[in-house]
Each structure stands twice: as C-alpha cells, then as structure tokens.
Image (cartoon, rainbow, N blue to C red; front, top):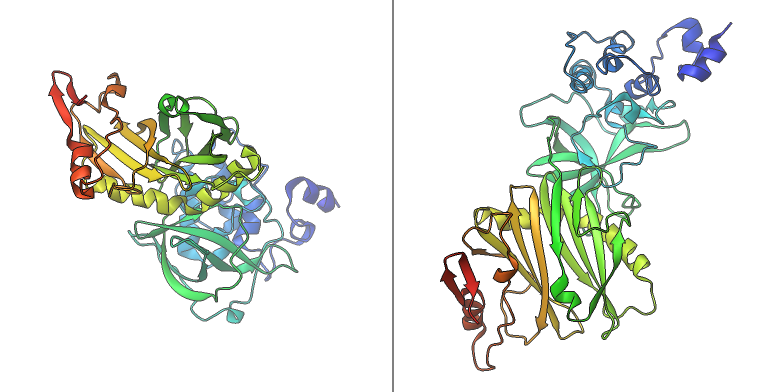
Amino acid sequence: MLAHTLSRITGVPSHILADGFSSNRPCVAQIISWAVNRTTTRVEDRAYSLLGLLDVNMPMLYGEGRKAFHRLQLEIIRASNDQSIFAWGYDTDFNGRTGNILADDPSFFRGCHEMKLMDQDKFDDRFGIFPITNRGIQISLPVRSYPDSGSLVEAWLPCRRSPNSGPVSITLALWESEYYRYFVSFPSPTEETLQFRQLYLRYQDTHNRDTTFKIDDIAITEKGFTQCGTYPPELTASTLTLADTRPLCVRVYSDSQANRYLAVAFGQCFGRHWMHFACTSTSDGHSWEDYAREEYKKMLTNGLEHGQSMAEAHSLGEYGDRVWIFQTHLPGSPWTLRTSCITWQSSRIGVWFEVFRYRGFSNTLDVWTDLHVERSSDANRDMRGLMLRRLQAPDGIKASVHAFVHYSCLTRTAGGLRPLR
C-alpha cells in the first residue's frame, strides 16, 4: 500500500517494491541510481548496501573509503556484460574532468533511474564479455572521432536513458595507450560513421596531483599589453592551482595598439601540466569575455594534444635544472611572445612572459626547447635574471647561427647562468 510513497522517496519503481525482481530485471545503472541520495555513517556502506540488489559477493573491508565502490563495479563487470555500468555522469556537471572508467560514488549515477538495456542484436554480435586485464578493461565498442582531435572519441553503449531516447554515448580520451572518461560540453560528432574498435579502458585510480602555476607577466605589461581577465573568472591571482575538477584556465591580454587579444591557456591533464597560446588578428569589437569563453572551449577539446605535446618535449630532457622555452609570433603583429617555464617539485610551475620585436629569422618558433640552467629547480631563486632579453641578430646572420646565439649567450657566475649584456 505504501509502494508509491516509498518509490518517490527512494527512486525504486513501485512495481519492484510491491512484487520484487521479475524476469525483467533492471539494468545495473538503474539499480545503482537508487542509492544516489542514500546516506550512510561509513562511506564504504554506500557500496556494500548494494551487494544484494546487484547479486554480487565480495569481502567488506572498512577503511578503504571510495575504493569499496570501485571494487563493487569491478565485481559487477566480472559477473555481467551489462555495459550500463559505464553510463554514469549524466545530469552531473563534470565538464573538463578526466579519470578512469569507474565512478567514484553512487551519486555519479544520478539521472539513470529510467536507464534500460537495448537489444544488443540491433548493434553487433561483438558486444559480449569484457575481461579485466592488467592493461585495462578490454572491450569492443562502436566509436567515432571528434573533429580536430586525434585523442577524443565518442563511444556508444547498448542502453538508453529513457524509452524514447537513443543509445547512451560517452566520451573517451586516449592517453598512453589507455582510454579514460572525459567530459566535454560539445555536440557529438555527426558525420563520421561508427566503427567497432577494441579499446582498453583505464580502471586503476590515477592519483593525479594538483598543479600550481606562478605567473610573472610584468615584462609584457610593460610593453603595452593589458591583462583583461581570466576564464573561469575566479582564477584571477598570479598564482593559480588546477585540479582534475578544474583542469583549465584561459588568461586574456589585450594589445590595444594592434587591436587584438592574446589568450594564454594553463592546463592540466592526467597530472601533466601544459600551456598553449592563441591570438586574434583583430578584436572586431568582440568583448574579451566572449573571446575567453570561445578559446576555453577550443582548449578544452584539444587539451589532450597540448598535454601530450608538452609531455613528449619534457621526455627529451630531465626536469632538474632546466628552463623550457616557447616562442610564438603573434599574427599581424611585430611581436614575438617568449614563454619560459621552470618546474619546481614536479607540480609547481614558474612561468615568465616577455615580448620582443619579430625579425623573421628564428627557427625556434612554436616548439618547446630546453636550456640547462644551474639551480633553476630552486623555488627560492630569483629567476627573472635568467630571462633571455631581446637578442637581435644582424640581417646577414643565418637563422641557425642566431638560434645558437639566442640560447648560448650566457655567462657563468657564482649563482649559475646569466645573460650576457
């Protein structure tokens, strides 16, 4: 008699409360969604309270925290081929989040209360078991790539969120041979045909650390560039910290003399920091806020490529006592932006900006290069003395010679290396 009242409170369908499970058993995602609003004294019991409903047996280990829910999902995967277990994250703001394929908490299944499995025969007979290996969860899924991204794919699952909706799709990001969940707020690709592909889904915890950037932009503001603001707007300080839940910040500068905006993106993915730069040919009366939001979306989509590019550059040299330098010419402008980065304690990054007049002879544009500098890994050292000032080569000097001069005109002092004056 109280089935309808209990259904409104718990989310469990009234016919199941009245009659129990029948042959038409709900999918895994729907069952887990019944625990979305449940509270327990111990965090592990949010997982253990679902054992009977999901017909799973596993030891209860108090003290493991959220790992209990990870273990529960792996046991479900071992006992079932119900792929709705990967359909979490709907109706939750995870924009920009990256992580393994497992949900951290039952609340991640919010919005799955009407989830149902589809007839897998309508998809392909390649749907089936997906074994857990030391490389990841091995699975075949129909996927298609996102435009302008070599690392993001949309994968379809044989389940739907409501009776009249299509198959659930999730976004996966390729990083070092494994695929991770990735949340982006862009429309799904519509033109490319779905193709079955064997994937390895990361299920181990990533243990990513926060990344802190300490930014010094005095040198470019002294040359007429004005800092307009940042997006998201709360990240305005000269020291900003990025995490998995907030992996990106775009800072916009205005070159009023040339009527253009410069965007500098600071990002983090899978514990690796990255930076990228964009510049408008003209502002055309657009506000810097609109430009910042537009670049934020682009950077969020391509952040994986930027992160991989910087990780590959760092792999060519050791972190200790190295300054990483990136130069890019600002289109339609006489200026070249030079960025110097130093890594302190693997997760603290010092960043310095400067601009100089572009002469068209440097062969080190748009590529990260490293320079060995003694004691650069010391966070207490004043690094502004190491900034490479404008070295203008005569017109007859070859680009290769200029590149050597540009990075080699340093004199050794008791405190390390300093530019020649």
